[in-house]
Amino acid sequence: MPGRSGDRLKGKVALVTGIGAGIGRGIALMFAQQGARVLGCDIDAAAAQATVEAAAAHGVAIDSLHPLDLTQPPLVNRWIEHAVALCGKVDVLVNAAAFGSFEWLAKMDYETQWRKTLVGEVDIVFLVCQAVWPHLTKGGSSVINFASANAHVALPLSPALAHCAGKGAVLAMSRQLAMEGAQHGIRVNTISPALVETAATRGPLDEVEGFREQVLAKLMIKRLGQPEDIGWLAVYLASDESSWVTAADFKVDGGATAW
Ligand SMILES: NC(=O)c1ccc[n+]([C@@H]2O[C@H](COP(=O)([O-])OP(=O)(O)OC[C@H]3O[C@@H](n4cnc5c(N)ncnc54)[C@H](O)[C@@H]3O)[C@@H](O)[C@H]2O)c1
View (cartoon, rainbow, N blue to C red):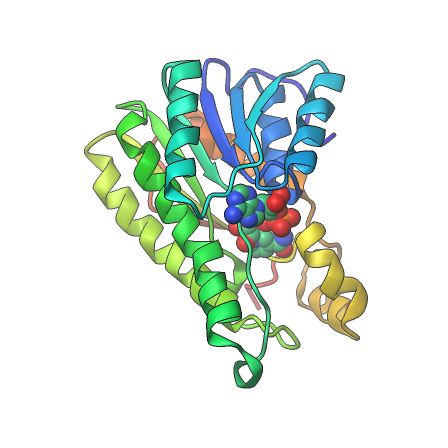
């Protein structure tokens, strides 16, 4: 269980995608501990349910609609309508769900790897933002999207071509969303993590020879990131503490992209 109890998000209704694993799971749990009413979703029903139960075991509540595939616009709309019916408003959206393929240019399959990654990293962020936009609390809401260190730098040994394109797109579109949202009191920011230890990264860390060493060599702080490292920034960006912060990108990366 990451985080600790507090009231930094008391009274906030927060939607979090991808609560079944990694960063989305950590953020959902930390938001609930900080007093937010959290509604999650995930395509993986068992994983999402495990997060709901982990919250309950620690005396906090997370609601979730699962399984829910965010690549399907009618299901995205259903989730948002469910949230509004249940909670009456939406203050915070965290787009943590994503999926993609890692492959070198020469071997990349257009349909099953390139396009799949752009759907899994860009389209699902667009779809959820568009569906929730009219419901976001006017005058004080926050959208948190995930770019990546790979939106800024290339990492040797990592076949991250489609991921770089996807995260570069999220970075750019979030700036545009911030501009479009400002007049409605909607703030939009991105978090750019370097490698965080999650289900998505454990494979390459354990299986690709030299990759873990390469990642660690790039870090000024010599440990891998954990969901909690990201979660505290998300708590800040979701809260009114960050009410003058929009169109910003935050590198939470142990110094990896600074040298
Ligand atoms: N872990 C890292 O090192 C890292 C680094 C930079 C950026 N990011 C970004 O941070 C975010 C979270 O990453 P993570 O490592 O925690 O990911 P993860 O793969 O561990 O978890 C993603 C969750 O999203 C869910 N999901 C995937 N497709 C879905 C769909 N179509 N509909 C609904 N749910 C779906 C998965 O089931 C999973 O529970 C992602 O946007 C990722 O690109 C992660």
